[in-house]
Length: 160
Image (cartoon, rainbow, N blue to C red; front, side, top):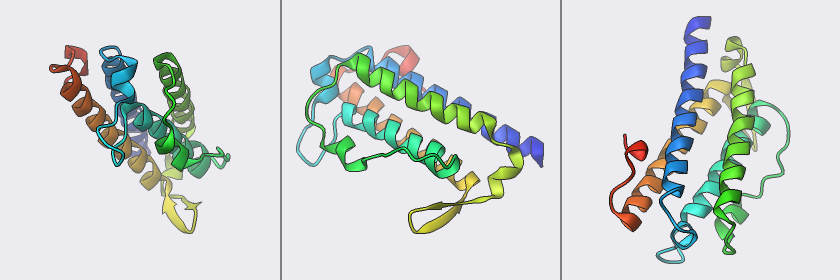
């Protein structure tokens, strides 16, 4: 069972690295205006989604799994209207995902079935890891779609 658990953790880490690379490829094709564009007030910009991915991933891995408070203010990720430079967005996402990767790399396989408390409910570490990956995947898809909408065809490195 340890081999299956370790493969799950290693594959989860690989998916997160792949998704982050796709987002970074999108950033390389966009202007700051395109990154922070909102089609309407009910929609998020790519910049907001990146802040949200950094905050959410860090909270689930570092805080929920690792037990170290992050001080996350989720709503501020979506409320932000002043534009951070692309370099700052990249650095924030990179730093958050390095923290997440360190937590996942250090997890003993047997810990996947342990429970953690998040707000007012409990979930397994496995559920937390799965959520980090699926949530990151969902928003990566949105960012890819938003990028394609803004510029047309994606760079080959951002596809598939």
